[in-house]
Length: 126
Image (cartoon, rainbow, N blue to C red; front, side, top):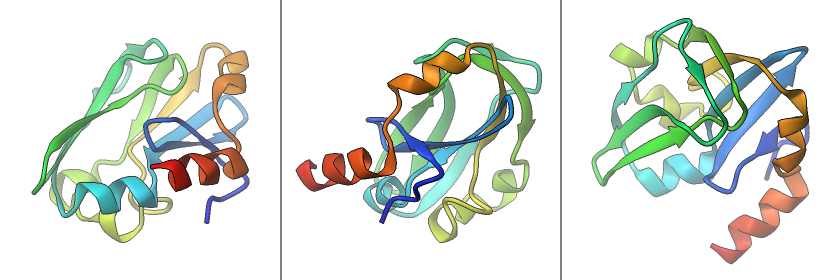
């Protein structure tokens, strides 16, 4: 079930917004599809990304996938614990498995993201 206080992308990533900070991660659906996650390549603090730009690399036993920036912004924090424990994404994708926090440049970009109910429909089609 999708969390309603979170926005979603068509790539099965999530965004939780608090003020100008956007916390980004992969959804429970995505981590199940990926399988056991074995490596995460996080960006450096201060790096800036435009919406849709590849930002994080997540490697699992099945594949390697890129997490794109759901909104434009500057990286203000990364989840460093994932470097030693990438399996946290599998165990807790919405809590301890978050990836990065961005200082959003343009909050109107959030309008292009899905609400929880829309995301549930997308998963049903997958």
